[in-house]
Length: 371
Ligand SMILES: Cc1ncc(COP(=O)(O)O)c(C=O)c1O
Image 1 (cartoon, rainbow, N blue to C red):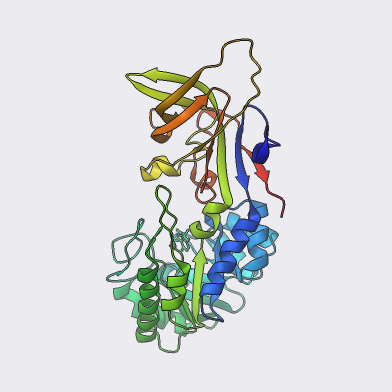
Image 2 (cartoon, rainbow, N blue to C red; image 1 turned 135 degrees about the horizontal axis):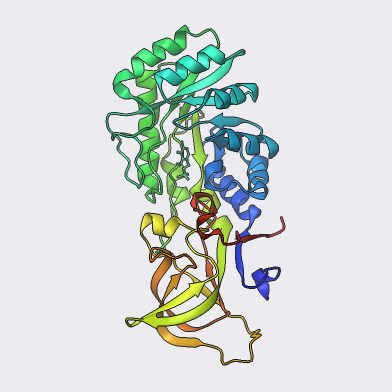
């Protein structure tokens, strides 16, 4: 196999991760933010150890959302850990306390349990589900009924309970709002709004955590403009961000070999060694993830090689469901059985959010670009 797929086994089914890309994206976010602001990597986007090691090197810390992610973050050598997530068990809270993590508390009951089990001082932020959220994007978590955060109407009571605690040190608010926002000016406005809101409801706060949500355009040429974000974001060193998609998406590609080509009811399908059980994001979000064709000259059969030229092709996976589709009707100049489709921008919420065990196919290989 040539080029980036050099070490890939046949038939090719692999994630290609480049830790340096992840590190560079986090550095770029840091460069855009005012000095003193905290840049954390959201482990949920991609928890491969090589990527976590790169993130732990350059970020102020890692943001985790489970006991499993906490263990991975500690193994990666995270300088600091922020523990979030809406449904934490006592075991997870205790592990967070033992690790010296900062905890983003999501409810009054969680605060009571954390206070009861904390055997040492614990820094906390309260995550708020605000009455209104000015920020657009997918997966809204605030300003609407969701399982996330403390309803704004109950915030004063939880603040008072936190202040009564002997162990818990209330540092600020956590205000993660949306996913995949491409409007950098709106995101900067949101940061300013979070600062004003925090000062209004928690005077003296030391942390204004706006979470993640910086977007990636999977289907077009749009970019989240860090320059615009940096020029408009308030110069407030209390800001903290938890960056997932923006850092991890471009650090990963998914490559899958074409096992078969067929036409049914007038539509051409490329059947892949792989699919949505490895890369569920396009099916989950309902979009077509573009691919490039990596031509493979080697042809091991003494049979004519199936190929199509100049037709739109639908990239379908190996699962027994018509929903196992990564991209519909993308035109190709030429595609042969044995060529490899490469899906860029697949490093965030790719393998992590997929149902790997459906049909018990082998998991994808992971190929790392050396740092
Ligand atoms: C609390 C929290 N922080 C950070 C993130 C990372 O967000 P993103 O990948 O959009 O940067 C998420 C994603 O869901 C989240 O829930």
